[in-house]
Amino acid sequence: VQMIQCRKFKSEADWLEARKGAISATDVGALVGISDFGKTALDVYMKAVYGKEKKLDENSPLIVRGHLLEPLIRKGFAIDYADTYKVTNPPQKGNWIWWDDGRPYLKGSLDGVLTRRSDRKQGILEIKTTELIEGSRKLEDWREGTLPQTYITQVLTYLAITGWEYAVLRVRIRVSSIDRVTHQKSFKGVEMHDYYFDSEELSEQIEGVKKTVDDFWKEHVIPKKVPDVKVL
Image (tube, rainbow, N blue to C red; front, side, top):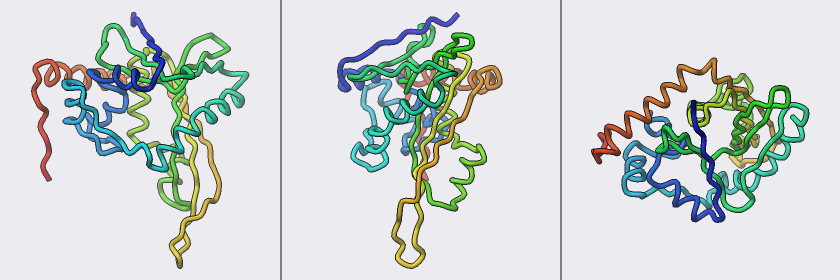
């Protein structure tokens, strides 16, 4: 039986400090070579062993937009699914971190906790924002339900941490177009897509996430053995 812990933080600085010395849900993609932000297994190692986390450009339009929109998207989800789920938000100040006592080196910050009204079972709410060009293959993939592996891996990691039975991913897509003559980009509209994940159906992949994290911790973090770096 998993013993899930949750710690809340008064400031973002405290939250960031607590993330050091552990593997986060966004790190797992790097361990299998599919990070969205160019993060590598070496970056994960440096954070886990030395507390040196690779910094992202917090001023990039995509990240700024994501931070501003997340609470609005979460509120919209709660309204849309009011009859299906109760939504518990992260703390107003700072953030929270979740982990399993049996695997305390794997930690995650959930975008929200769902309680299904029909059976009171808890689940994960994950929120993403992205921008895509009208008519692009990537946009069509989202519409057809083909999700980026990085997003899937992150959701699988949260399911591994919590042991809960389901997760819902809500994605807000800002759709733009490119003028073929001027090459200027213009805003066309917004699409919202929801995807449901069942942990029983994904049990093999969830176990794969656990094994990846456990192996990395035992083979590299504990003995302080630097992982191989691929040279192009």
